[in-house]
Length: 328
Image (cartoon, rainbow, N blue to C red; front, top):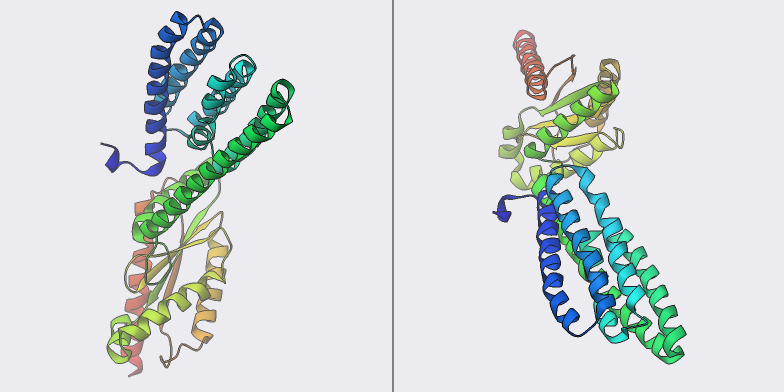
C-alpha cells in the first residue's frame, strides 16, 4: 500500500500511524503508573494522549494538503514541556523519556527546525538537572542528550540526502542533465496554476536538434553523449534562474518560462539560438537547430499548449526543408 506513494504522500500517513501507536502505548502505561501511585505522570499522559490522537486525526484529514504540517510544532513542544515539567520529580523515568525526543523531533519537523528545537531542550534539560543534582550530573545529562541529538541529526541528514538523490534520479534525464518528460508535465501544470492565480503568462520554448540521428551515425554515440550536457549547460546559462529545461525526446528540448510574455519568450529564444549556433561544437562542423516559442492563451490546458508548440516546430521544419529543396 505505502510502496506506491511518493515521499510527500508517505510522510503524513506514517505520522498518523506513529502518533496513533504512541497514544495507544501511553494508554497502556497509564494503568501501571496508576497502580504505582504515580499520579502526576498519569495526569501528564492524560494530556499527551488526546494531543497525539488529535494530531493524528488532523493530519489524516489534511494528508493531501500542505496545511497539515503546522500541527507537529505544538505537539512536539507539548510533549517536551510535559517531560521537562516532570523531570525534577521523576529524573530517571523522564530522562529516558526525553532521550527519545531527538529522533521523534526529526521525524515530526524539518531537519533545521528539529535541530533548533533540540538545542532548546538540551539547554533547559541541563539547567534543570544542574539546579536539582549539581554540575556533574548536569554535564552528564547535557552531553548524553547532545550525543543523541548528533546521532539523530546524522541519520535524518543522510536520509534526506538519499531522498534528494533518488528524487533527482527520478526527475532527471541521466544523459543530458535536463529534467525528463514526466517532470515536465508536473512543472507545466504547476506553473499554469500559479499563472492563473497571479494573472501571469507562461511560455514555452522548443529546441530541436535537427539531423540528430545523423550526428550519432557520423561521429558516434560517445561524441553525442558528451555534447548533450554542454548543450544543456550553455542553454541554461542564457535563461533566468526560475526557467527550467526538459528533454522530451532524443532531439527535443523544451524550456518552461513562468511569468514571461510572448515578446520576452521570442527575444529569449533568438538569444539562445544565436548563442548555440555561434558556439564551437567539436567534433561537429556546425549545429543545425530548430526553435519555436509559444505563450499560453486564456483557459488553455498544458496539453494543448504543448501540442501547439509541437505544431510550430513541425511547421518550421517543413518550411526549412522546402527552402533547402528550392535552393538546391
